[in-house]
Structure formats: structure tokens, C-alpha cells
Image (cartoon, rainbow, N blue to C red):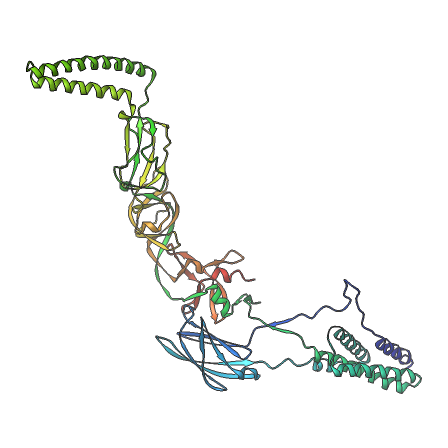
Length: 562
């Protein structure tokens, strides 16, 4: 008891002398701001083929999301009647969602709801419960249970209460009860200082001060409850599953299929490339060689369409020094012969007028004169002896190596023309497993393009076996020369679930996995074992069961949540 007399007054004086510390400019000596409490809005869900429904309460509005159970595709234009605590009501469509005004949502408690859903093809009844939580209770109950367990605990609780009240007064007006408690605490402290010599008075008044200080703390807690933010955010849960609210699913375009076990042809993958059909492609080359000359309008560029027989250019013969001397001598000799023949023809014309020579002799002389003129013109104009380069087939120019003045020989590939509607795929088979006649590759837009087996060669010197396939839709495959992966069926079969390739994603550990739609807004990752099936699908051999809903579109986006 001797220790109480100095300790209690000191503690109480320290309690009463506490004043709020104000930080000067640029500093804050007070406690950190409270962390906001984030929680999802009250919601209810129900699933039964063919519908899946989620109802979210927000204020006095009930937002309803209606999707197809198997594919998770939003259903637009359905009729939704709801049996609520306020009676039967009908939800109004608003884009891809439905809205229902419901004032009864403000009442805390569990509300039983019955949804009658009807679309063009089916009707169903869905029952669920919507629980509206009660407002958060003030912190008084939490503090009252242990605040008076000991005198030090009472002092600490009262001291913290006054601090909370002081900090609250700095930022917002305090509640009337808190202000009254603070004033009462100071008055009781003054009375205490006057009665310090009496032990009973010290204990009694000290307890009163502590009680008033605690009351101030509780008043602060009641006046400033924690801020609560209601926000539906997609996030990964502690167990590894992903919570994706329906609005997020709509944005990410999440789609699912229902797993079904079955027997499927197994497949093997082979490297391949696109090649043109040999009977629908051709080369443009020179037969003699020479200097290239452009046709009227210039040389065509790659991608240009050409017709069979169209002139693509000319090859002018290149004359050497010795040939030029010989041509010069030939030109002089032709000029001499042309002059003689011209005089001879003129004489015959004069004689023909007199009837001395026959008409036949005159025509022969004129023909000889014309031939000499043509020979001389050919020597003077080398273009008359140019070689024409013509397209062997109709198609497009895939390669072009033509420049004005370029010297080419007979082995030069000047143009390569292909028919883009007739293509083949050449694959290299490194195994000895026989393949079936069907195969597939991925097209330009990621869709499956079917192939038909054309023939297989023999491996040479231990190399891979070349296999050729014809393409059903040549316009959907990459251009000639593109590298592709060929998925060829085999004669063996395997059991499993066939899913699109985009349904399988890689986890952080590098293993293959899929996402299972276990609840309307929850997706669970599942490790699987896969095998190739075709260009657009894979076979899940283990990891999922029949009837489970697997994410086929948007799985990669779900996998990004951390």
C-alpha cells in the first residue's frame, strides 16, 4: 500500500497532463491513418443447368448476372421474375445484366429469394439466400472485457482513449459524449489533486478518472467507426483459387465447356513447312542469257497477279567485240546489196511499164529489196532480236530478281510464280510410328486447317522421312516457306477429355494446368497431364473428371492474378 500513494498520483497526473502533440509543417507526429476495410458486396448465387445466376446487392439495387451454365456465356433478353420479401417483382434488362429495385435490401438479415428464369428455349426455378450483414458493432464491447482487469490496464486504456479523442478532435468535431467525458476527466483530476493525502479518496477518484478516460476512448470509437470499402475485385485466394466477380468475367470474356471423357485418336507432332504445288508453280528464266529490259509499265513486284503468257520482260543479247566487228562488216555488205537491189528494182519498174519484163520479175525484185531492208534494220535495232520473258502459269509473283540492265544467264531465276490456291505441306517424320491419312495445322487466325495425306518418301542416309499433305483451305494457311507444326493422327486411341489448346496454361512451376469453374465466381487451378490431339486441341489424360466445367477462353488471363 505504500507504493500506491506515489505511483497512482503520478500515473493519474501523467494521464491528465497528456495533450495532443501537433506536428509542425511537413511532419506528422500522430498515429498512422487506419487501414480501410475492403470487402465484397453482399451476394447470392444459384447454379442449375441451363442457367447460372449471381445477384449482388448495392444500396437499394439488386444487380443480377445470368449466364449459360455450361459455357458461361451471358444470356441477354431473358425474363427474370423474383419472389422477394416485398412480393413478386420482375428484373429489368440493362445491357448484359438485369436490375431490380429493392428497398428491402437495407434490412439486415437473411432474405430467401426465388428466381423464375425463362429464355427462348427453357425455363427454370432457382432458389437462393441473400444475407445482408448488420452494421459493425462499436469497439466498446471489445475494450470492456479486459480494460479493468488491473490498475495498469485501466491506466493504459484511459491513456489511449484520451489520445484517440485528442487525435479525433484535430481532424473532426468530437461527439458530444466524448467532449463531456474529457471535461469530466479533467474536473475529476483537479479534485484528486486536492485529496491526495487520503488513500481511499485517491483510489476512488483515480478509478473514476480511469473510467471517464475509458468512456472517452469508447466515445471516439463509436463516433469514428472504421471506414468500409465495398469493392468486387478479382484476386487470388489463399488456397490458390481465383475469385473473379461476374463483371470481371464479362470483361475477360471467360468461357467454359463441360468435360466429357471419350476415346480419341492419338496424334504425333512433326515439323513442317508450306510448299507450293509443283504443278501450280513455275520459274521464268532466259534461254540464251543477256541484258534485262523492262516491258511497258516496268517490272512487276512480288505479290502482283499475272496471267499465263503475259510478257514480264525482255532479254537483249549481249554482243562482244569480235561480234561487233562482224556485225559492222555485215551491215556494210547489206547496205551495198540494198543499194544495188534498189537500183535494179527501179529499172525493172521502168521496163515493166513498157512491157519488156514480166510482172513476176518485178515482184521478186521488190521482195528481195524488202528482205534486205529488214536485215539491215535488225542489225541497227537490237531490240528486234530480244527474248521475251512470259509467265508460264497464272498466279502471283512470289520472287522477283529483275532490274533494268541486269546481266542474266540461262540458269538465273528471274521470276517465281505460284498459284496461292494450290499449296502443300511437307512434314519430316523422325519416328517409325505409322500415321493415318488425316492431319492438321494452325491457320493464320489460329483456327484448325485440315490436311490430307498425299504420299511419303523414304528416309535417306538415316534422315527423317518426308511426308507430303494437301491443304483443304489454302487461303487460311501461311505463305510458302512458312514453318508449321503438323499434328498427324495415328492408328492408336487414347481416353481423355478433349479441350482447346488455349485451355491449358503453364503454372509458375512449369507444369500444365487448367482452371475448373467450381463456383459461379470461383475458379480452381488443377494440374493435368496432356497429350497432342490435333492443331487446335489437346487431350487431358488425367487431372479432371467428367462433368467439371473447364475454362477454355481467358484461362491465361486468370493465371495472371497473384
